[in-house]
Length: 358
Image (tube, rainbow, N blue to C red; front, side, top):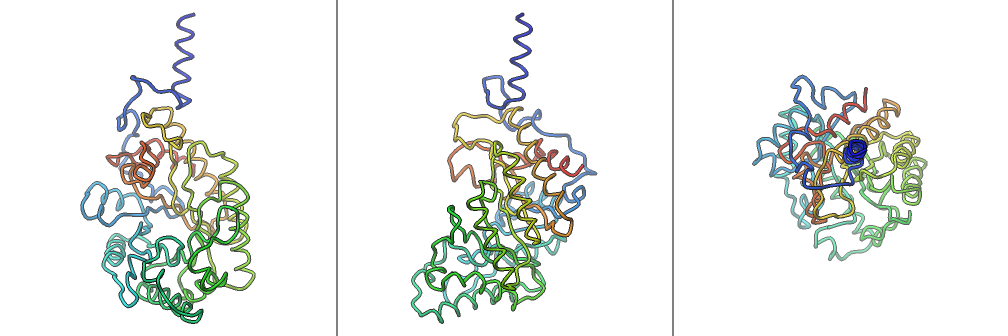
């Protein structure tokens, strides 16, 4: 009987991910990584582009980070270097150094570049928040920023998140400086101005929360379908997918499949799968958690791979290794949301991505 209960206990620990103790492995551990097969990489194994949002400072200073980016990914997004405040810090000043560095790094290593992001409600530079002018002046500000940026990168950046996070949690348009000054038309104007500057660039609307439930998702879908109906040049929809290991598979499937139903290209644009959404301070990354994360990555990739091939713009992780993730600092908690560990070893989640296309 004692052996029977010991067996049950072992199965629970191995599969639940919810129990932890002194014997659980502390991450990183060889037990929680997968063997390295140099003949297999994400970019060679996946039938669609696989990308990462990258940090220029880490590319410059951390060789293992840079090596993994070059080896594993064929699409790059700037984590911050192309946001409004970084590119356009003063009304008559543009700073291209960091964004140009990323574009050149991508060119040297044969990577696609996806631009992120032209217009976002969050963190506009102070000069924008203090700008004085009528609607026509604000319209010129919007147009000049978008067209200056896109023209600078024309032929080098193949696609853009034109407008980012314009929908609030209740499914309505989010209150922001652009909505206040230009009304709802700021969104359609942004796409039109972007298309004028580079007719060959693919233009995306990008947002988070598609997988939360129908309220916000329906607001996002209404926005993009209305833009399509108006003849606005929009080519894709970005699902950020900052999600968690216990998000229902149905919610993830509904998010991806309803986005595909718009007929637009679909980009899983900022994915990571949090393993500690409850902010448990003494949680360790156990084999059980690794297995759950692997299964969730596999389901997400399998669902994405099932949509029409001509709509598969790709999947992009939000940074590379667990130590690079914004989650640890933002929430002050241990977490392991990405396919590579703190030392850029492949985790079970990496194998889950590969298994998603088998």
